[in-house]
Image (cartoon, rainbow over all chains, first blue to last red; front, side, top):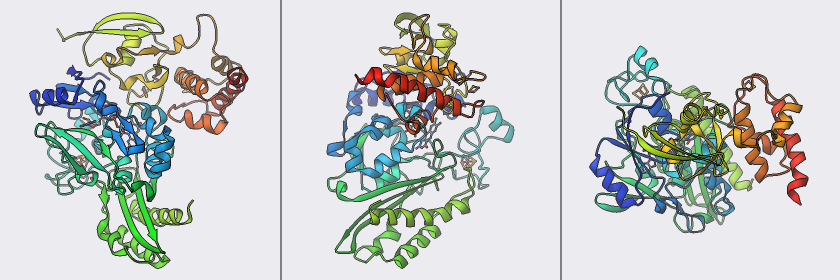
Amino acid sequence: MHLDAFDLHQPTSVEEALALAQRHAGKFDFLAGGTDLLPNYKMHLNVRPHLISLDHVAELRAFRPEAGWLGATVRLRNLEGSSTLRRRYPGIAEAAEEIATPLVRASGTVGGNLLVETRCFFFNQSYPWRQALGFCLKADGDQCHVVPQKTRCYATFSGDLAPALMVLDAHAEIAGPGGRRRVAVADLYDPKGDGVRRTKLGPGELLVGVQIPPGAEHLKAKYSKLRVRPSFDFPELGVAVALEEKGGKVARLEIALGGLETYPRLMRAQTSPLVGERLTEERVKALSEDLVKAVRPVHNTFLAPDYRRKMTGVYVRRAIGALRSGS
Amino acid sequence: MPKKVPVRLRVNGEEHELHLPPQRILLDVLREELNLTGTKRGCDLGTCGCCTILVDGEPRLSCLMLAKLAEGHQLTTVEGISPAGALHPVQKAFIDLGATQCGFCTPGFIVTAVAFLRDHPGATRDEISRALSGNLCRCTGYVKILDAVEAAARTLAPAQER
Ligand SMILES: Cc1cc2nc3c(=O)[nH]c(=O)nc-3n(C[C@H](O)[C@H](O)[C@H](O)COP(=O)(O)OP(=O)(O)OC[C@H]3O[C@@H](n4cnc5c(N)ncnc54)[C@H](O)[C@@H]3O)c2cc1C
Ligand code: SF4
Ligand code: FES
Ligand code: FES
């Protein structure tokens, strides 16, 4: 498969990358590991005439798990290989080692994973395939084949790291024309968006890295993933749980879900009423049922939406059980 | 005329000065410009592992790498895994145990296995199978591939543990 022609830029600093982004506004993509972008480019999905490689931007490579800092171009392989990260943030290590294959993880990065393109049967297809069916809203067309209408795309967010970071209240550092800012990872995504633009990053904004706040290392945390081939596939469901109990009562409980909708979601509305309560079996069951009711997967991945919803409840109950029994 | 940029690649210890469009993929350049056809193009999308090469000693998918971005790195293809005329113990084990059928996936498996056993001499079958989980084979059913890599691990372990 051949790529359409583009100019390749190789900045050596965040400032230079941002200047290039401004010069080629609307006509570029950042390139990190390329394991998401290049397959999409090969299928001629939303190709741009400029690529800005982040390979030579040293600042983005900083990896300080002892201080909770993960630079945007830290490789997924480095996450799974770090004993400090595994000890402090087991949920992140679990999510990282379940992404794709060892070969993809050798190239794929933290930033690329958070900003990974959403997926759909009708999108991740070759150009002739898509042309034969009629292009869709997300690339080259104007209507959705999954939920027939012309305004919103329902492609599925299939990144594994986001939920694991969201339950720890990690923040993303973003650099843009207006300077630097930090937002909660949960707020990188826009549940009210049209699903075509997949994050709230402004035009020309660059993800610098992720900061996990002090104290998060004391939470018990877990990530579990439902997929078709356990050594390979994108999540059909990703469940991250973080829990702290004090004196037998919930001091903190966070649950984030990925692989179900267009955005990963932090389920505070369902978990916050449990703070200060004892986690009885009935309460865990009721919580899992609330979560099943709250999610709306559509049929654009391998497994049926109903099954993914049911498994959401099962995975949440199992994860909480495992965290409490220390397994 | 499409725009071209200078690209300097170091492959199997040899320097190559090329002029290529910036969008050229490393796999295509290895096969089509340097005639190193041992590295195979399977899916071309990151799923099969047939295109695996070593970049600074680490297995990477050459189908998802721009040739220009491989500058400054040491690239090793299956042709450079062992000295000319000699076989790496992994290659020898593949032959001895019949671990190939059509052979299309073989270079990718060998490159991945060589790097893994270098870092994990004496690895167990389970560890080997996890390390090779990004390489697909449509013929063998994997049993003989795992047998071969396990046998190579046993050959390599005593030598490397000293
Ligand atoms: C076979 C296969 C299986 C896969 N399975 C999984 C899986 O199970 N789970 C999963 O989560 N992913 C999976 N992926 C997708 C992908 O490999 C990972 O999500 C990976 O982490 C992406 O990182 P990258 O650096 O390669 O991203 P890239 O492809 O370089 O970039 C992805 C997107 O993010 C943007 N971007 C990257 N970095 C920045 C930055 N710092 N600032 C602003 N924008 C940026 C790019 O412009 C692009 O739009 C799979 C891919 C393949 C090929
Ligand atoms: S959900 Fe609809 S618009 Fe989005 S990628 Fe699929 S078919 Fe296209
Ligand atoms: S050809 Fe590169 S992974 Fe299949
Ligand atoms: S031997 Fe044919 S694909 Fe593996």
